[in-house]
Length: 503
Ligand code: MN
Image (spheres, protein in one colour):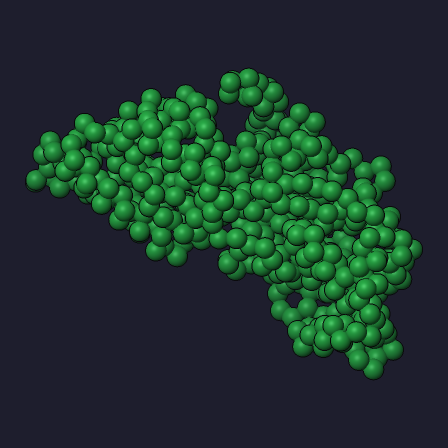
C-alpha cells in the first residue's frame, strides 16, 4: 500500500515509590511481559514497545513530551500496575498530543486464594490504580479508549487491535496531502466543507490543481511509450480484458489511453506525495475520458478517492484503507441506487465507475461503454461483483460547527445478473432495516458518497472519532428512530458546549 507507515505504540506503566525498590522492579518486569505479549500478538497490527515505568510527575511529563516529538510513536497504552496517584499525571496528560488507550488489566489472571497476602494485594492493585487514572482522564475530559480484561485474553487483543488500526489511520492523516483536480461539482452542498477547520481538526491538507496540470502530466506519458505497453500487458495478465480492448483489437487505443491516464495520475500523486485525490466530470478539459479504470486502479494501490470533488470522502477512503491494511476484504468509494421490492428492500452500490478492485470477488473484467453524462469519450472501466458478507458504509459531513461521522452497518448479499449495467457493483441490505436506516441516515445528514468496507468495523471508526474528538452516529441492528432523533438533538448541544467544558 502506498505511503503506509508502521509506527510504534508505547506501553507505559504507572506506579509510585511507596512500594520500595523491590516491588518496583517486579512491577517493571511484569509490565515488560505484558508489553511483550501485546507485541507478539498477531491481532495487533502495530508493534507495542515497553517504554517506561513512571513513578514521578517529572518522569510522566518527560515521556509525554517525548511521545509528542517522536514521529514514530503513534499512540500510548497506559496501565497502572499499582496505585499511581493521578495528580502526578495532570501535567503530562495536559501536554500529551498523541492518542492513548487505558488498559485495565492485572498481571495475575487468577487470585491465588490459598496464598494471597497483603504484599500480593499491594503489588496487584490495578483495581485501585486504574480507577484513580480513570478519574483523572474523566476529570480532564480526555478522549480515550478503555479496554478491560486480562492481557492474555484474545478479546482484549481484538479491542486493542481495533484501536491500533484507528491510531495508525490517524497517524497516516497527520501531515498528509490530498489533491483535487478541479473544484466541486457545481451546486453540490455535501461535498463542500471547511478545509481550514479540516486541517486544524484532522491534520491533513486539501489543495487544488487545475485539471490542466494533470493533463500536462498525462501528456508526458507517450502514447506509444514502453510504460504504456507494459501496463497494457499487465492488464491482460491480471484481468479479463474485453476482446476489442486487447492488443490488436479495434478499441485497443482506448485502453492505451486509459493506461496513460493511470500512469500520468500516478506520477502526479507520487511526485506530490499525495495520499488521495478527487476529480469531477464537470472539469475534464483536455482529458478524453473520465478516469474510470485509472481511479479504480489507484484506489486499489491505497489512494483515497472521491468523485465530484468530494475531498472529505477521498480522505475517509484513505483512512479506512489504512485501518484495514493486512485484513481480508477491501474498502472502496461508493454511491448507491435503491431496490424497493415488497419482498425486501436492498441497495445497489454501483452508481458510476469508481469502485475499488480491493472489494472484487473474482477476476475483474475490463470493458468500455458509454457513460451517459459528461459528454466525453467512452471510459474504460473494471467490472466485477463485490462479495456477500458483513460490511459498512461511512460518511463524513461538515455541519458548520463540527464534523459528524455517520456509519451504517449492512449485510452484503449475492449480486444479481446486471447485463445492461457494466460497472462494478455491490448489493446490500441495511441494518436494522432499509426504511429505518435510510431515515436515520437522512436525519443525520449522511452523504450519497461513502467509504464502503468489508473489513473496517464500527469499533475502528468509533475509536477514530474519539481520537479526532468528533461526533459519531452509528446506525446498526439496535437503532430506533425515536432514540436516534433524540441523540442527534442531544449531540447538537453537547458538541456545541464540549469545547467550553474541556477548558
Ligand atoms: Mn456522486
